[in-house]
Length: 173
Image (cartoon, rainbow, N blue to C red; front, side, top):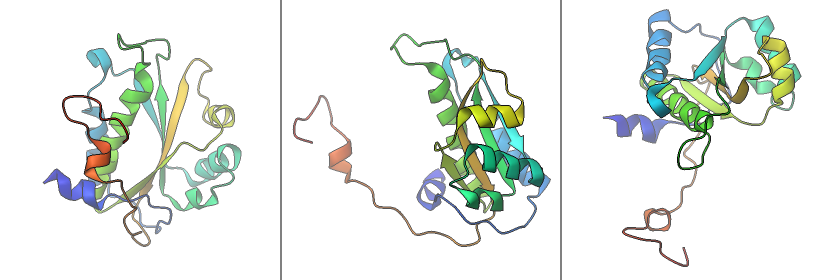
């Protein structure tokens, strides 16, 4: 059941050096490909960084305060291709679409015995430069992927009643 992957998902910040089996890696990426998107346009691209030298350059340029990223065998750089498209609700589609893609990827990674970490603390310009990404494209997240060296414990979450309001807004929550 998918709830097992949801409960088991952790922000992994230490990876062992095992190479990812290609079939498992493809299933993880396929989970992202199958994610829904606004207008079903799939206006996104993931730059998959597997080369260790390129990974290290990316981390040093774009996220030097998170050197642990160099232990991840794969970094996924989530890019929005159409930053100008705004949905009828007034929200830009690309960050929402990519959040769904990365969530699918992170849950399939758990099912494959791997771990991920969502990284929003990075410098977009240097990352763009290292990877040769055009200026018009927006970089939304970097996600590390690999086999966890250890498994962090669960993080605290707010109670159910503090997060859900049924049939209208509940004041004071």
